[in-house]
Image 1 (cartoon, helix red, strand yellow):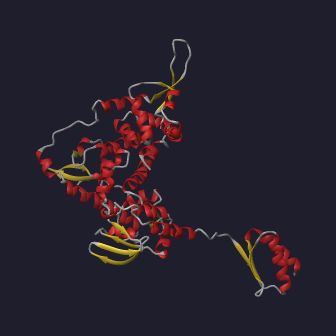
Image 2 (spheres, one colour; image 1 turned 90 degrees about the vertical axis):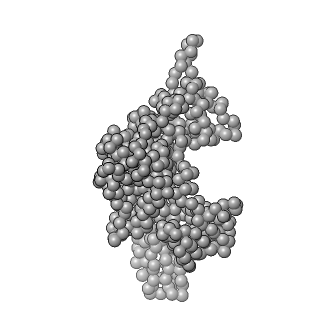
Image 3 (tube, one colour; image 1 turned 60 degrees about the vertical axis):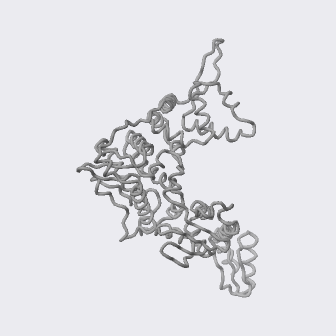
Length: 454
């Protein structure tokens, strides 16, 4: 899930308004597939081109990727058909970039970034959180949200609005409920919530933001455009460079308060005035996955051995809680968690809706730096076994059935069994006990036949 994928679902009228924002256009470019991104860059200064030219840009071996890239650009309405009248009078099919999108990218190429550089007062620079403090704040807020997701029932509470902002906070319960991550009654983590926990930080952020944006869309379409544009603007701000809350309009200030509650902005006060500094988590708002978000916010800590033993060098309660979803805990030290992947522990996670590939991917994404040079990072014997355990759970098919017994004679039991077998309903039989099981779909006819033979 990225911003371009989300933008495809928006109406054309909304996209036209969004492409008037410098930040939206940059975010779209960041999140495009590599080939689509290359096509956009090629067309920045050539204007409209004949449609057959675009087809010539791809080799015969790369046609599938070429078609996927072109389709992506058309879905986003970035690539539009136009007509160019030649002197000869013919009008060949022409393709051009969306005019607003084209103009915004040219502005970026010319050095515009949409932000006015302002010299920060010395008091603000001194009071602004240092980089390490920003990291701790973002980690504390985001891990607090995920820990609450694991156990949302009282007395646990979600992250609250920071006092420094002085504005109403985000209803985290409502957001998680609408996103399908928790169930209402009794309040508990839902199947989608378990899958959410195993995603990378970037995907988690955008799943929640997608629901946050959807809430804005319910209020007003015009508000939707302003919300998206401001969210993306936060993604392009420099980490650790503060700005005053008073410089924002009321809608933007409320969004900034909500982002502070989730750890994307860190608030502080100077002479009674509220300021916020973007944290590294905010980089994910720029539209595409950021290696900085993945590597810095959560460094690798997991080592998996061929004997199914899992070592996690971490002091984080959240990371241990997530591992316990599919690992049997055996030992816990102040900075080390030791457990084992077993059939029972993995099957329990599978019952929660987690997939084998999600478990393997999680262990790969969070691999300790000391094992990153290994190929594969997770031993094949372990990953293959996890997939086999999932295959075992999918061997049995559940279907409604009816048990028939208490026949007066074994002869009549045999007649009923033959009737069920003849129609393809028979699932199981025990002639010694005079009972059998038939599919529920044929129960009415079985009941009529048994009455006849009695």
